[in-house]
Length: 94
Image 1 (cartoon, rainbow, N blue to C red):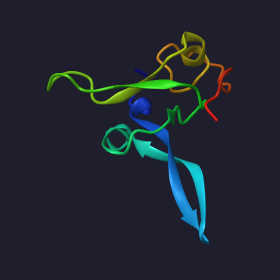
Image 2 (image 1 turned 90 degrees about the vertical axis):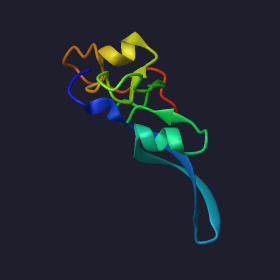
Image 3 (image 1 turned 120 degrees about the vertical axis):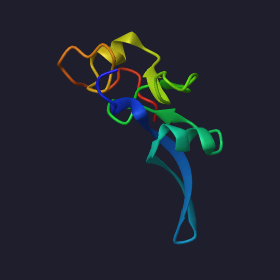
Image 4 (image 1 turned 60 degrees about the vertical axis):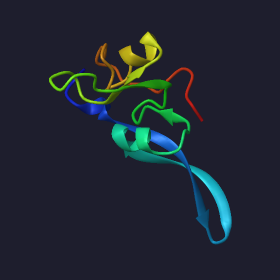
């Protein structure tokens, strides 16, 4: 994992603004996303689909997200396989 960049993600949350209910993306830490109500999550950098990985042993990797698509990981600055050219996901989570 390049640095600790994938320890944050965006989670879709419901907000009430001026008595109007809206769904918006909020940048959260992965543990916060785990603790929250089940909702959509996506990569903060490329907006691609990710899955959560929990820390299994005390000396193991901390909670983080990982791209579902290898292609997204190759072209995302937070991805494990980043090639140096950042671009948005080919299938972004909207």
